[in-house]
Image 1 (tube, rainbow, N blue to C red):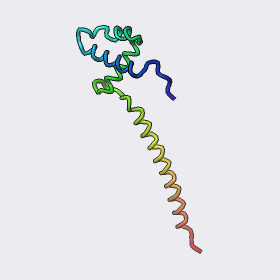
Image 2: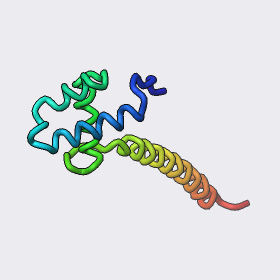
Image 3: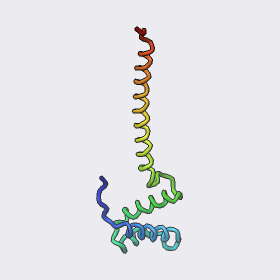
Length: 105
């Protein structure tokens, strides 16, 4: 279970949007994260992490998107199910092959 979030989603989205916009403008780029973080009561390093993740999700920065862990968990679950099905099919085929090899009475 994930830990509870310290900041509401609305604040997080607003702060991220403000920081991304401020970083695009060369006049306000310097110290934008610190300034916006202080205005909204958010740690500047936390805001920087949010902005980096937002840039990754937009595709402007390389990295793992927010959806990647969910997709990876689904794929791993599917692989486990397929391996279990393969093991069942192998044991079933071995059983039936043994039945065919036995002489009939």
